[in-house]
Length: 389
Ligand code: NIG
Ligand code: FE
Image 1 (tube, helix red, strand yellow):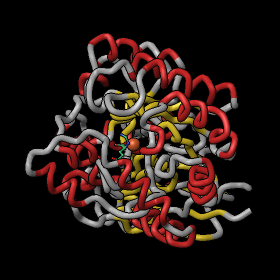
Image 2 (cartoon, helix red, strand yellow):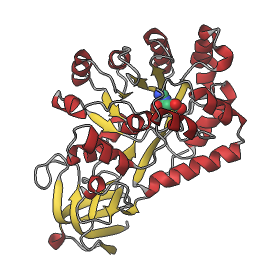
Image 3 (cartoon, protein in one colour):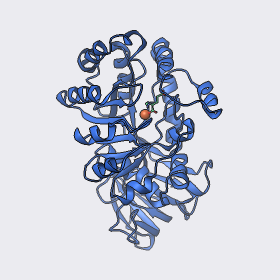
Image 4 (cartoon, helix red, strand yellow):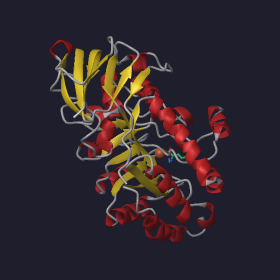
């Protein structure tokens, strides 16, 4: 048994409302906590801390649970800054650029893809991410998708098969054949993935097509996720709820009926404000979802098209500034909300028995994450837990 006392935290956000001041984030001041063999074993006032093998004195710094980035497309080659510039000048986003990244990704060697993925991972970690979800979706052929799943599986357990990202160029005249490929040989070759996702929107897959993909995922024993309502109200949210997806992601355009559906479901609404930022789209109102009782997560959506973002604190700042969240709500959504979106109960909070993954900030209060956007405030972040395979 190895125990570490982390003491003299100016502020400690636990996400356990039973602790501290009764707030959503379970805020303790002048606090300490103990990690024993990787798990949280004790939390309380610094003055009451038990003896431990090691002591870390944080000298008044704030501590939050490690960020759970529940939506990324980390494995891709190339970049599309020209599209970003065009959008800033007024051109709309229509998803068409995905095929450019598919071309670059297919052409890249495994070594190159692994190298650029690990660079992006390092950036996420520097920003305090301790758990990451990674999707495939930029190869769209059997061996290529399997290669992306393989690269992602070396990094995280939370790997998602997104063969149904768009219909690739060579299948544009036969969508049905592509759906057969995705739900058959491609899904089989990507059996290492834990999740199946589908982009259900204008220019991607219809509700009926997406239902076929999700049903095949369920039959293969996978958890389900859905990209929906990014470009319009296309029925993605309703389908996600119908299929009991763990999460429906984007939710940029949602109807009142969608909000009610989500509130009465166990599907998390994952908001990706980096995508609204980078596509110059209107931000969805997190306030509207939260007030209706919807569980909300926020994530980076790191991808070369709509959100080349690797900073969870930037996402938190956007959520607070543009989507009507309080700081506490945004912090919760970036940690425990992300854990819920991945249907994980061992991460996202700091309470006795949870994984001891935390972030120490170079700030006395965690709200500095939103208050000082663009500042590098992460003093220390727990390492990611390596996948067990
Ligand atoms: O989450 N919307 C679908 N997929 C990505 C964007 C993909 C791209 O443009 O490369 C997203 O926004
Ligand atoms: Fe995405």
